[in-house]
Image (cartoon, rainbow, N blue to C red; front, side, top):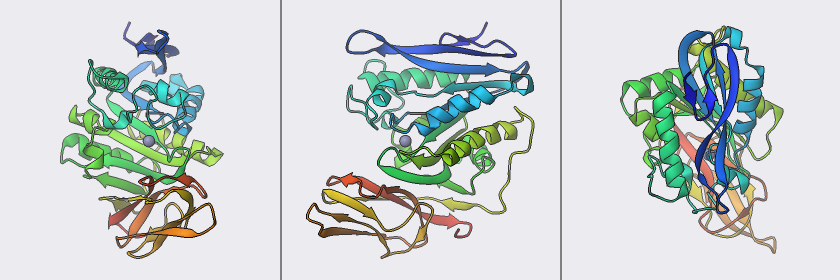
Length: 326
Ligand SMILES: [Zn+2]
């Protein structure tokens, strides 16, 4: 019987298990829960994971909910869900790992002799290479920020890149960050699954408060992908038009204080527009953050009154490179 970690792939069954990657400070194993639904008929293996950043837990909940609702009698192929891929970071409700201070999504392809995050990256990438035909990577703005519902794919001219874009356009959003940015090539999981030829789509949605709508969008995005891949019945939606964005500008605060956003996720802003400001603890506005691009999409912004520090990433604005403004 084929298995992933300790979870067996049994045709017509949902099974559960874990992947053990290393041990905690007290010696207890890090057993990463894995949930598998195997159809009776052959088909692709669609792998979805959440919480590569531990405080982005909307994706984790949505993978579990999708799995609970999946009808294996209708499934062709295999759905593999890893709700929380980064257990130390999840336990600390932190974007980075408390064990080594690393951002897991910047250390791929990992290193079996490195610190915990490097070892984790190495192990999970190896598992994906062994099992996954498609990877869905769920993210959000985390506790301190909000993002709209949109897709990210890496643009590198390969067949996997074209397939990723095709899939992303069928997952329910009309906005796709078709990225050749340095950021996505900086040790992200996407960079390295794509290097292995596995089409990969990152789904961004919501932030620290997981609303029913966020959950619905996450679940629908995965179901739509499985429809597009003919793993489950139904038509994946095709949008009338798409807004393609690329070459992000990352906006950092220069001061500590309370952040006051001046726009909302999904807004289109232009050069000189106010993105937000920082208020000190006496109530004085000490910093205004303005956009330096035209026709740019607000792909992430800090929550209202989120405490900032100098150098904190507070917004992502990404120019529209094709398609209309929303
Ligand atoms: Zn993330």
